[in-house]
Image (cartoon, rainbow, N blue to C red; front, side, top):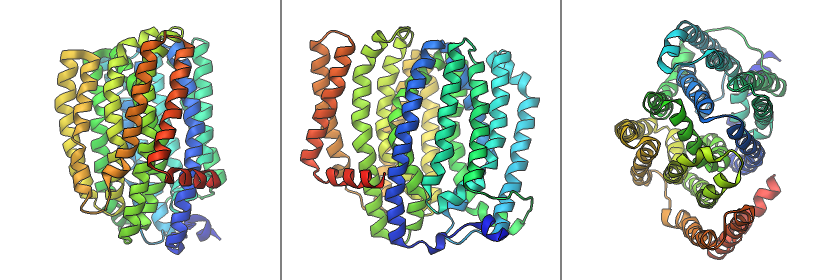
Length: 491
């Protein structure tokens, strides 16, 4: 009985047909989850950016970036390695990962506490920011406890179970943060919300997927896991240096207020990716791993994933960019974010390119080409650290955003390299959503020029964009209707 609970891994018995079915249903489930979660985050973010000033908002992103930096060292690619592994997982592997990860995370928390005064001096953090730092550090420990149960569900593609704690965490975090910010708690709103999120997620995860944590260690098991885990985590580390590391560095150039403006622009520019792409990436990594020996099936799955992401991300970015100037004027106390509108436009370019290239790096990892992803990440990291600080120093927030956009253009390299491993008709799967989005953008520009700024104008632009885009995409890609029917059925 103990072994079945601890191991709980039946992935080797999953057929290709089952993988395909669970991938489709998983994408549908995660899409429904994301609609709920991002809807809650969207509303919460509006309230938070009303109740908080750019400096308070910037402190949260600076502290979060610092903790995210440390979080990468607490995993060493354990979860990804366990998910990607073809063979069944055995109890000793799970116990070894659990034990090793807890030791690393506890060491990180101790280091955070020791170096708190040093961090305070660099960024000028007050006591509120320090308590937030400690709360986020403690949340690393809570998150690490969930690793094994989450991996077991993800390997079996049981996303219907996996989403429950995620939804609860998201809703409780946003409700707590908004209510406390409304009551004037400032940065402390995030501190309490982080703790509520971590504790609720931990309790629900173990309730849904029971697994008895036990301390054990096997050097051979650890070496086997680290063969994939270390290269994977090196890629993740580079991504962290490129993104969160850059946020920390920009804190010294732009200050908390400038970082707050840039964070606002990034939050909204990347919202379509978080809304539509993340759940696809979540379900396709284990699915692609199961299909890595089926080249035709893999190519077909990758093509559909990119098409689905672009189909939803491209029009969302068009609507976002063209309605943002009006929304900043309409929403009370929102004009303070108007200096970030240029950054929003520039970062949206990066977001659109990421919709194409992120699934590709996901494929490289799934088929074991982890070194290829590493090389791409090295390129993107170097370019980021060359362009972003330089342009930020010269042109401020907009310069930093322009630097990120320049780096995004280098994604064409990943597209070219991917053709060696998967057959993808990029002009077909990316071109159709792009054409429909550009036509919709033209319609929105006309409406914006002919109507005064108001709620009516924004509503008219939103409805027109949806109608025009839907009609065009249905005309040039009739199969979309079939995809929609399958999605509704699976939801």
